[in-house]
Structures are given as C-alpha cells and as structure tokens.
Length: 401
Image (cartoon, rainbow, N blue to C red; front, side, top):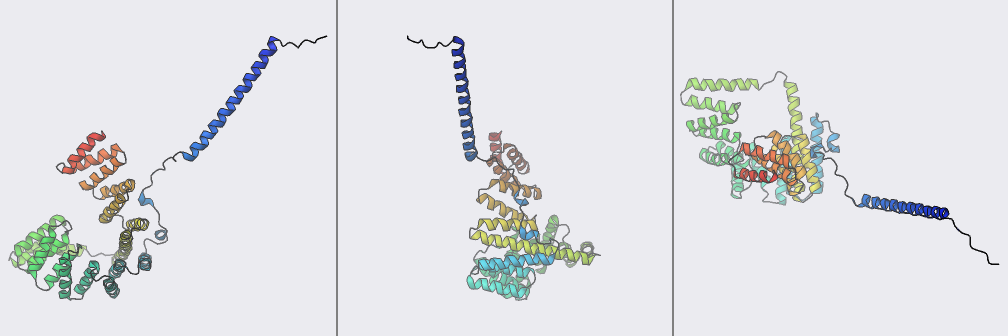
C-alpha cells in the first residue's frame, strides 16, 4: 500500500518563508556592518589628519635658554661662549666662524682675542672683508688712523658691503685732518638707505672742523628733526654759533646740552649699571646666536639656522633688521604661515612701513585667507596711496572680494 507525502499547510509555508526572510535580512545587515567597518578602517589609515591649531614660531622653547637666568649677565655671557665654541668645533676652517668669535670678543672688550680671531680669519681667507673691517676698527682704537684709512679704502675699492665702514673711514679722515675726504665719504653715505643719525652728527662735526659753520648748523638741525635728544647736535650747534659770534644762540644750545648731560646721570647708579650690564650681556648672547645662524645658513643647515634666529630674537625681541632677515628665510623656505608670524611682529614694531603690510597681505592671499589679506593691503594703501605696488594691491583686493 503506497504512503502519501505529508502535506504542509499554508500557514506553515508562510511561517517558513518569513523565517528565511529574517535570516536573509540579518545576513544582509551583517554584511553591511562588515563593509562599513572595513571602510572605516581604510579611511582611518588613508584620510588626512585634521590640521592642528597654529602655534606661533615665537612660542618655541629652547632648553639652552630655559637653563639660563635671563637676569644674570654672567650666565648670558656663558651662553654666548658655549655657542662660539660649538661653532668653531663644527667649522674649524671657516673664516666666518672666527669672525663670530672676534665680534664676541670685541663686544666684551677682549681686544687681544678679537685681533687674534680676525687674523686667523684672514689666514683662512686673505680677502675676507668682515675680518679686514675688524682689523681697521682695532687700528682706529689704538690711534693708528693711517692703517684704518689704508684698509678702509681697500674695502671701498672692493665694494665691501658694511654699513659701518663709511663712518669708520670718515672718522679716521677727521682724526688725520683730511676733512674734505671725510665730508665726501659722509655725504655719499647719508644719501643711502643705510644712513643714520650718527652719520649726520659726524658730518656736522666734519663741517665744523673744516670751518663750514653754516653747513655744520644745517647738519645738526637736521639731526634734531630725527632725534631731539641728541647731545652731539646741541653741543655742535653751540660751538658753531660761538664761532659765528652769535653768543645768545650759542648759550641756548649749550644750556640744552648741559641739561641733557645732567639728565643722563642717575641717582641709582649701581642699579642702573647692573641693568646696563645685563642688557649688554643679553645683546652679546643674541648677536652671537644671530651671527652663528648666518654661518649655518651659508652651508644650508636650515634647522640650525631657524633655531639660532629664534634664539636671538627671544633674547632681543624687537630688532627689526633681524626680523626682516627671518622673514626672508621663511619665504625662501616656502613657509608662509611662519613668515606671517614674523610680519605680525614687524607691523607691531613699525606700523607705518607699507612694505610690511604689502608683504603680509600677499602672504595671507597665498594662504587663501582673503579677509586679513584685504585688511593688510588696505593699510598699505592708506600709508602709500601713490606707490605703484599699492595699485597692484587694489587689483588683488578686487579679485579677493
């Protein structure tokens, strides 16, 4: 007898199909979760990290500086010694390294050490201009004005770029009684960008020594438009008017000279001297750091260059010429954000210099930060509306807006 197959009710069949659907759904969800997990892992390894907040270059810390008492002249000078010795160990055959040592020795009045270091630099390179200038300067200080003139004129012929050279050479001419040469040297210098109030003061003295009283007066009056506290200018004007027989005006200027001289003395001389000593020591350490940075830059060591630049500026934060050099360094390294840090300090120190604002605007534009770029360009335009570069800045502003 044949047995019939068991029959499945409709309800049972629908229940089985429902269970299968649930299994398929759970399987699909599981696969989807696995795919999502795999995607997340891949993304975590390949995605670019979120940018860190910008930290100013001036906030960097240097262990050498942190170990030094910034109020101790002795420790600051020891820091300079350590840097000089490290530089000479690394560059024993570099005239530039010996120039760093010579400048340090000169700043701390070790004249013998400075002489030896500059002579060593000239043994390594007989044409090294900075060492020749140092030798000329030491000759001047010991009263050997003819050697100063001989070396100085040699440097002028080779177009040695040292802004102190014209003053040194002119001073030697004055001491030798060669006033016309001194005047010519100084008149050429005061028309240059590297001129200074000191150059005008010296030109006034040269005219006074050469009995050009009216020209001397014009020079000293020009000095006072730049520095109304210049004792040299008031003294020079007093002498010039005395020689012209104008006693009343002469007395007025000599009285002002005496007032400034008395104001220069301090009742707390000991405290004032301690401050000066500390301040000078910080300057020595900062100058050694900067000079060393330039040696490292000359051989392409950018890490040491940056470190020593920043170390110098932590010791003396407001030296604009050093900040300009650091800005150029960062621009050459294509580090616009670091250059912006430097420019921000420069515009604080020199807010009326259009060049700083133009450069700052260009850097912000490069960083795709239009609002601060526009602000910087507009500040430059306010300061120098007729400058051709500001015409270009106006065009950039239109593009950015």
